[in-house]
Image 1 (cartoon, helix red, strand yellow):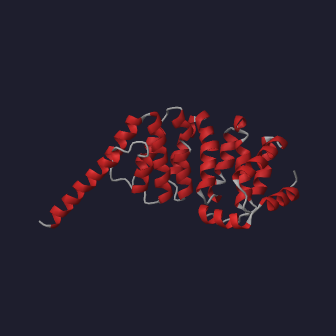
Image 2: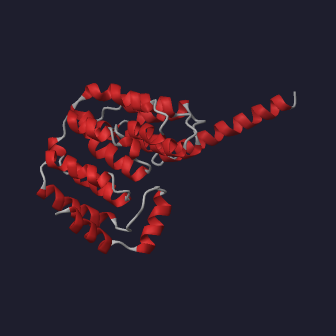
Amino acid sequence: MDDYKLKRQLKKLGNKQFAEDIKNYIKSPYDFYGIRVPELRTLAKRLHEEYSLKEFYKIFDRFWKSGYHEEMSLAIYTLQLYENEFDLKTWKFIQNKLKDMKSWDQIDAVSTRILGLILLKNRQLEREILKMSKSENIWIKRAAIVSTLPLIKKRDINLTMRLAEMYVNSQEDYIQKATGWMLREVGKEKPEVVRKFILKNLDMPTIMFSYATEQMKDLRKERQKFKDKKGIFRWFLGNN
């Protein structure tokens, strides 16, 4: 499938109104055709069948420089399909693209189904994840904790909990949501660990707490008690 034919097909699949709606929802700075994810995944399967992983790296780069959110997403969805061939070269290749990602959907797609799967096979990369967690780029920071999802599913939660400790007081919404999401996932495997963490950090940001306690709603009463006590203590100090 050459570039000209592909671009023509992408434009044909596009929908102007959907393009405006999805751009506002995702808040990506890139242009949009207005193509739905299932249609992109169908194209990704065709590309995967047509190119070897080595060949696709070059195709990926062309999509990446297009300026269109969907072409960048198509590159990601296609790369995901080479899962069995992922290696440290794939890690380095995709990590170099993180700085160009400006939306949660692309960061999460790369983190959960590319970076996280490579991390699962190459545990020495935990050092790289910790470096990412200290980045000033919020998307790279988000990628660090979301990349631990495949580890969580194997009941390996140490890295996730270490990052959660680092992020628990974050003021950034996208980091709060990601941390709460990963705590919720850890809670499915090792609920006692998450319960203890939440009780220790009842003053964590509201969004993070809401995500983390989605399946532990009894802890919301504990948070309210904590907030009530805190309010009484402040009142006492203010009147003495």
